[in-house]
Amino acid sequence: MRHYRPKLFVLSAFMLGLLLLTGAAEALVRATHADQCQYSSFPGAEAFLPDPDLGWVLKPGFDAFISYDQHRVSINSMGLRSPEVSAKQPGEFRVLCLGESTTFGAGLANGRDYPSILEKLLSDKDGAGRYTVINAGVPAWSSYQSREFLRTRGAELSPDLVVVYHEVNDYLPVLVRKTYFNQFGEMDSDEQLYGSRSFRALSVLAKRSALVRFALKTKLLLHMRTGQYGPAVNDLHQIGMPGMTPNLLLSGDFSRPENAEGNAPHPRRVTDQERVNNFYKINGLCKKMGAGLLIIHPCYAYTRRHECPAVQFCREEGVPMLEAYDVLGGRLDLFQDFMHPNAEGHKALASALLEFIKQNKLPE
Image 1 (tube, rainbow, N blue to C red):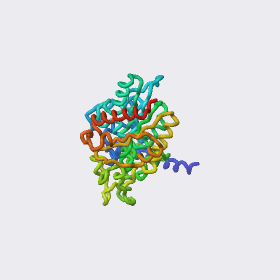
Image 2: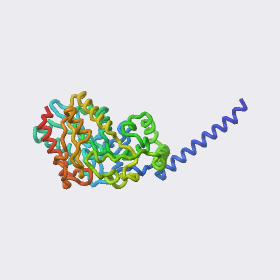
Image 3: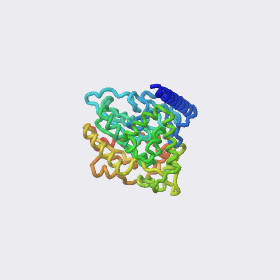
Image 4: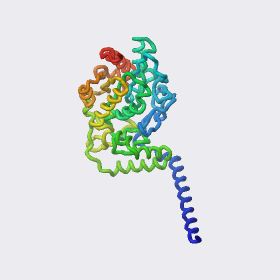
């Protein structure tokens, strides 16, 4: 027994020293912010929270001016940029809008996004209280993230009609993800990353430890500098942006390293097959909930009219599709930047939605 005591003492001392060293390293990384990843710190980060299932979500109860904008952003207790959603009333018709930053209303004051305007137009048509339009758009979300939102949270919102607006984020490189997540799975699509058990475990650790975030950041940077990537493919031409590369489309902290061919050296966030599958699964979820589905084919400032998997899906499945190009295409006066419609653009989109809904007799 005496022979074991010195060994036990040495082991205890070693463990104590390791614990102190780890604590010191954690404190140092936090103090120097060395865990922050320079490649995906997109603006307005104070309005977001990490989420192991959806990547990132809007912060419930957030109500403030965000860092990159001149407008107040108000998020309800469910993490939606909408007024509080109460229990559904008899005779109430609910529209759930899923999408990216355009649906969210990036660069606009509260109530000037097309979901909010659509609710007012519907109410003016048939009376207040008859319609509720819920804005579930989140900046930089892909169609996979909206699909998972609908799967995990759609039923509690009781939609009668689901409106989907997704395109450009699906076609951007995987590095265009929130800071605390692109350290993981830098060669994985959104579905591969967010659907993995290892991501869920690592995201819990990284949320709590700056040292873990630093290690994952270091891994990412090493892969970027020394990794052997296949030929990069720029798929923006598929969505009517010939000659546009991700680096040209994005700016500031969003800019990504490019290879000699001028294309981002990482795969897309959503592959063509995954994109089609997302639409099929969204359609299936809508049918299961007894809700209709309407897909808006997005239009950006320099988009040309085009066909893509979304158009083909709607044609083959008979899903109503509003072509936003017919409303916004070629109208730079309706955009505030490369990507986002301005307030007048949102008004035009909401008015077109109202007419489309009436013509297709969607609220029955």
